[in-house]
Structures are given as C-alpha cells and as structure tokens.
Length: 288
Ligand SMILES: C[S@@+](CC[C@H](N)C(=O)[O-])C[C@H]1O[C@@H](n2cnc3c(N)ncnc32)[C@H](O)[C@@H]1O
Image 1 (cartoon, rainbow, N blue to C red):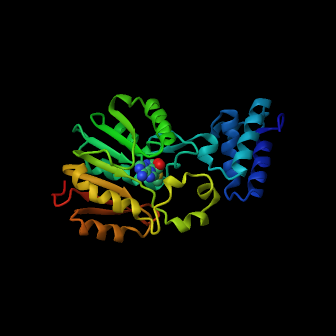
Image 2 (cartoon, rainbow, N blue to C red):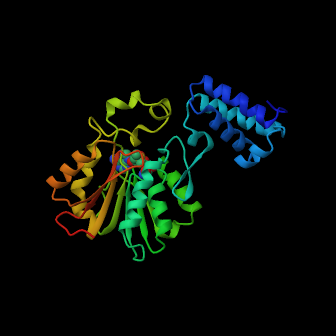
Image 3 (cartoon, rainbow, N blue to C red):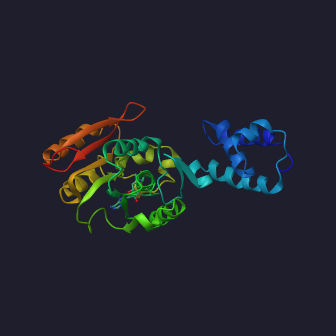
C-alpha cells in the first residue's frame, strides 16, 4: 500500500471492508485513511493524490485488519465523540451511543446547573455521561460507579483529559451497594439487552463489547429492578433520576416506578422515535 495515493488507499480499503461485510465501507475507509495519515477529511478530499508513506500504510493495515475482524470502529481508532468531547474507548467499555446524549440533554434541561449539584452515574463505562454533565456544570461534583475496574481506568483517563479530577470520583462497586443518599441528579445507562438477544446482534456488539455492559437479564430489566428501589435513599429532596432503557421498555419501567411510589416526571423518545429515557423524581416527593 505504501507509495500509492490516498485515493487509491481509500478504494482498496473500502473493497476490503466491503468483503468483510461492512455496509458503509467507503465512509469507513476514508475515516481509517485519515486516521492513519493524521489528517482530517477536508485534507483527504482536497489532496487525495498525495502518496501514503510507509508508516501510515502500516497503521492503516493494522486498523483495517482489526475492523475486518469486526471490532467496533471506536475500538479500532480508540475513541468516540459524545456530546461535546471525544472519549477514549477500549474493549472494556461500551462505545458511547448517540441516543445516550438524550440523557445529557434532559439532565441539562431539568437541573439547575448554577447550583453545586451532586451527581451520581451508575455504570459509568467511559464516563461519557458523568463527564459531559460535570463539564457543563462547573459547580457540580460527581461520582461514577462501575463494576469493571478496567472500564473505570478508561473513565479515569477521560476524566483527566477533560481536567475534571478535582470534581469527580470513580469507585468500583456493585451498583450502589456502598452508597447513601443526597444526590441531586442520578443518571444511568444500565445494561438492558435481554440476555437471549445478545448473540443475534451485530458482531461488533455481540463479540466485542463487554457482556457486563449489555446483559440486562431475561427481559433486560434486571438492573432497573435493583436500582429503582434504591432511589428512595439515593436522591436528595427534589432530586431527579434519568435512566436510559431499550426501545419498548418504557411502559414496564413506568409501571415498576409507580408500584414503588416513584414519580414519573417524563418519558422521552430518541431521534429515531423510540422510547429511550425515563425521568423519575424522589419516591413520594414533589417534582422539580
Ligand atoms: C450500557 S453500559 C453504559 C456505559 C456508559 N454509561 C454509557 O452510557 O456509554 C453499562 C455499564 O454498567 C456497568 N455495570 C454492569 N453491571 C454493573 C454492576 N452490577 N455494578 C456497577 N456497574 C455495572 C458496565 O460495566 C458498563 O460500564
């Protein structure tokens, strides 16, 4: 590949990705060539006749080989954009998804960022939710919990890169087992895929994303059954909890909330029109 033009490298890479069953192979090929060379897309489009040097060709080869094994693109290039920042991603973390930005948007719209909010993120993974909110709320302090030490190491890297160490703690725990209350905002994107459905998902997910981040038990709702009853002790008066959930799970979660005396403040849909987020108030409390 070394010596060929960037355009020719894109064409070859797209053909290889296509043979590996990757749908958007042309766009992905452009991204990998840009990544290998260290240029952005506009440079590639304007200077596609430039030659690919040997070091870039080797980087491209390594990344193509990984992507053809169906590693998620975010794991291949080591990061994914979420809300306003790039987040480091590894095989130990779920790739941040665009639909999860709905939780950030909803939390920013509902909580008063001028206050010194106390924020809790249950199942923080890369820290994308926790760190995006802390970055937007300069007076807030936040705690991110994850069972996976390896995921927490990635969250710590992201925390440091965003300069948030002074206002953030990351703790390895089984959900909120060690915690008491007084959080103003709880966010969580727990694993919610029904266990039997995981193997039928795209190989990028089923073979390369951590099971711990995916498997929500038989119907996908196990984490919510564990976490919702804990909101009574976790939330400060007037506090809110925002949970992401799978498409079609919102009605069952609203039912579960009501059975526990938890106020359902809102149910939100993502850009694809799927119910995706439930906003809860403190049990038997008033809404914000
Ligand atoms: C769906 S991922 C969400 C990651 C990140 N918050 C996001 O939105 O991209 C769920 C996260 O919950 C963590 N997790 C799963 N079971 C857990 C448990 N029992 N206690 C704490 N964290 C858990 C996983 O390790 C994973 O990082």
